[in-house]
Amino acid sequence: MTIAVLFGSFALLLILTVPIGIAIGLSTLITIMYTGSLPVEFLAKELITSVDSFPLMAVPFFILAGEIMGKGGISERLFNVANALVGNRTGGFAIATIITCMFFAAISGSGPATVAAIGGIMIPAMVRQGYDIKFATATVAAAGSIGVIIPPSIPMVIYGVTGSVSIGDLFIAGIVPGILVGLSMIAWAYFYSKKKGYKGLEEKTSLKKIGLAFWDAKWALLIPIIILGGIYGGYFTPTEAAVIAVVYGLFAAMVLYRALKFRDLPKVIIDSALTTATVLIIVGTANAFGRLLTIEQVPVQIADALLSISTNQYVIILLIMLLLLVVGMFMDTLAAIIILTPILLPIAVQIGYDPVHFGILMVVNLAIGFFTPPVGVNLFVASGISGVSIESLSRAVMPFVISMIVTLLFLTFVPAITMFFIPE
View: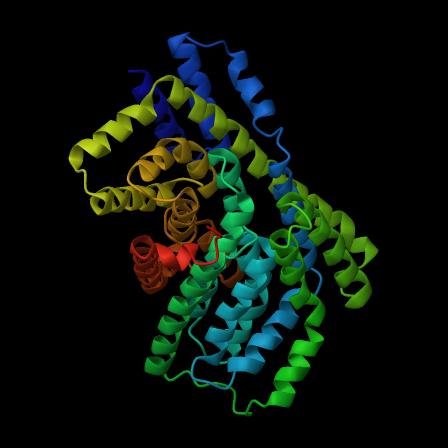
């Protein structure tokens, strides 16, 4: 009955469109008051202790770094590089958009931030180039999900903290899967563009043009090298890397590119503070929700139920992937990671999956939820930019969803792709 009250109240609050963080907190509070087994102060205590974590400090700094770089002229330069490489090919603008999202993903660590930064530039540009506005919007909404797969990634930080897994190893393991997801989206964009006759730019590309684009974007392209190289080289932790990303981003945007002015800083800081507050409320309430599940022994019950269905490793992992796919459609990614990691990670380890590999599978799977209805955040951000209705956009992104699911299955059954760069 306790579990029925917890999940029933949570589902009801979601139906009433209560924000996800508040819905999780209220359902936890209702359950505590119903059972009387825990003091009401339990929720308040969890809200404080769950965010009192050094690794978790990386989240607000990566959010701030993404805001600085999104408003600091960096996204335009990244697009110029991608456009110089593929702009004259069939579907060149669509492919360049996806590549730009991959570049920006290595800076922002956030799906919605990637859509906001790239979509404002690329959706109007694609429409001017003759692309269907639905396809243009769907391309940005889908490619924005790569923002949480290619490191640095905020969901990977949350998974690492929740599951006590090395965040540095997760970042290394996310590189190849992120590239594969991008390539699968590029394949669909090329096929669709060829079918619709979307030609590239008439001007031919050249080594000189590519070189000039790279030179103009050199300070932006150095950001992921500094962040990831510093972490993998052992010079600083992921949290310290996030702080360095903020300092370097400010220097690049204000001094080197001069696209960000002092008068712009208050808005940048306020926007990042609002995003951070939203994230940390979800982290705090989801931790309390998860602790309540553990006290009620729900993880043990779910593990027993899954293992009773089959003892086959592949059947169980497919059931877990299906569960995550459904959860990702209805729940915020960070909340899902915090609540489900303590439940699913022990099962994955028991059937032979490495915690790092499983973490990447979890992040890639839940990233699909960024652009699937009804709670796909990327859909709402992209729709707000282009004006395309959520219903039309939901249909337009389906081929991208399928391409990402195929990639996810490939990553699930070929662990070497994810674990190749992880030291033994």
